[in-house]
Image (tube, rainbow, N blue to C red; front, side):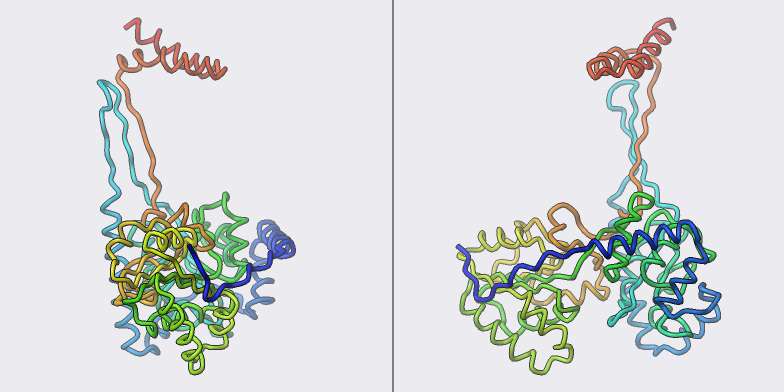
Length: 424
């Protein structure tokens, strides 16, 4: 049985008709008018009136000189962590070939995508670590060419930390360009870019909608909404630490859900009080407070098994486990973007560069997909090779299946091979 100490009201359905139509018109305009349209939207939305969008090597070196050494060291550490893990993931993807029966050889090849576009948002929180997660992971996968975009902060260009991050992570070319127009520019190869085959990166609703509409022309990483955290905890957990981690993720914005599932009513009530206490002094309470007020939940369940069922139903982007039975949860949980086992780990570690990727599914998409990983930048393709005898042997089987489907021309392609190789 589930009872709620705090329950959020269901979010009101959003009418996205205007957003969809606005983005559709923008994308059509850019597809037809290309550079002229990009320049117009850049001036309108980014206040960018510079005829040059691509960042020069001199500008990259200048940004690097101006940044503190501690940040550069920290960033390189995080980059190494993420790319090392990505390379370990890459080792699990194997080319292979097998003779499934005499004369029938089937194979699998792993081929990196040729060109990828990576977007890093600006906004109130410029997500510098996103450069690691997208550019760094794409580089580790063997992508040939990486184009990166980020919105300019002012007439001088993008945030220096973002520029340094994109360059250090391995972007081949970097552009001062934001919003839906950045996504479209990478897809169509505008303002000097090479057209890409896949686009990645989070952003505002216009960026997300542009990715949705561009999917099919190119691949995308995933469609992500407001970030989420769920913590599952029992009476062994520290209420103060649980509250801290809930608020740590809620600061993203007022639409960011923060959920607690617990087998202890005492802990749940203590966390509710702790959240309110910590909000009084939290530097970002202007966003975390509304998020907790409107989207926060505390649900009490009767057992670990029921807690797992509740977590799998929420299918959260980030799932922290703080219980006396963490191994049980690690074995049993199924639906999450990324899992943080034990109080020693936290979402911030994953977000900023402990090694796992922070581009993760939201809005229950964890029921059917994981997050961005090295495999997203690689195509798994197959091939077949047969001897003449094997081709003759299987031809009548395949032909009969073709006939059953009514695909007679398909059947003929098998029939002619049976005759061709029977003669020999």
